Amino acid sequence: MFGFAWIARHWRGELRLSVSWWINCVALTLLLYWLIPWIAHASGLAGDKSASAYTAVLALVILQIAVVPFWQMVGLWQACDRTLRTTDSIFSARLAQVAAVLFTLMISTRGLVAGAEQVISARVAWALGPYQYQVTLLPGAREIEVDGGLGIGVSAAVSKLLAGNPDVRRIRLNSGGGALSEGVRLRELIVAHQLDTYSSRECSSACVSAFIGGRFRYLQRGARMGFHLPRNWESLSTGPVSSLYATELRYFQQRGVPDWFLGNWIRSGQKFWYPTEFQLQRAGIVNFLRGTPQA
Image 1 (spheres, helix red, strand yellow):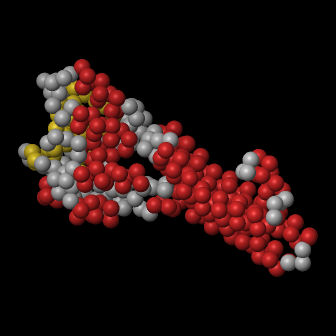
Image 2 (cartoon, rainbow, N blue to C red):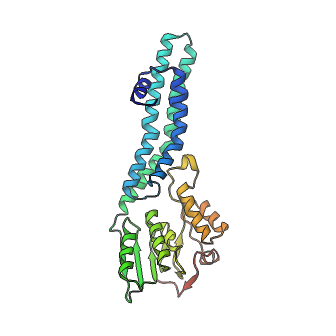
Image 3 (tube, rainbow, N blue to C red):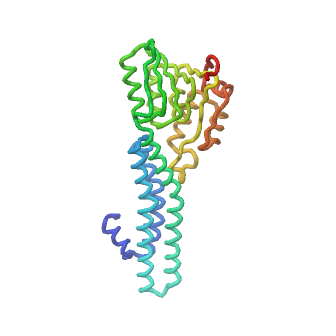
């Protein structure tokens, strides 16, 4: 039904005005707002925070908010002109033309924020390249330190060290954040190897997703942990918390983190929330505080 011939006929205004409006505009738009997020999740793009994945999602967003609405508007306008030439219903046809313009502006404007966020996220993903972190086996071969942004490849580097050093029992995480997918992969390694987690300076954003996987979780006194909601390209259909990050929050809940803590986290939005040491211990994010604050 929706082959190239159908696309061309709509573009030229050869379809009935009712078909152009109700099927090609209204129904197709509703379908895309469900289909695009589904494609992103089914293909794994929504869970992959690499630059290439962000670029692919950005292409889907552009298709949804620019390419398809432009095709819809042109075809509907052409169908209106055709109707004006063949009917006396001038008012209805002109009204449809106005609706075509307003419809396109509405769709494009609502999607503009999502598209802009994808551009920003793609640039961040490129910045978090594989050379923005250091993964080090500390003296004694019982502790690995991850220092810096969680760029693409950090989990692979940790996995390699773990494979060659079976006596490792703890991972030290000092990171302001990075790719959520890397944080999750680190957590999977931490859980699989039953490692303790420790932060001596800061563990924020995607880093906390790795930290929570620790068998026992230690925080240096004076260090901080930052929580926020990542930018959500699905915000038009899912609200402030994307379906991907909702899964992440459920994992924290399964680890025993209470609702009051998760509520504060969600309410923080995209601004970083830095809980107190008391709050972190009370919520079970941190099991033990160590030593005195480091300079």
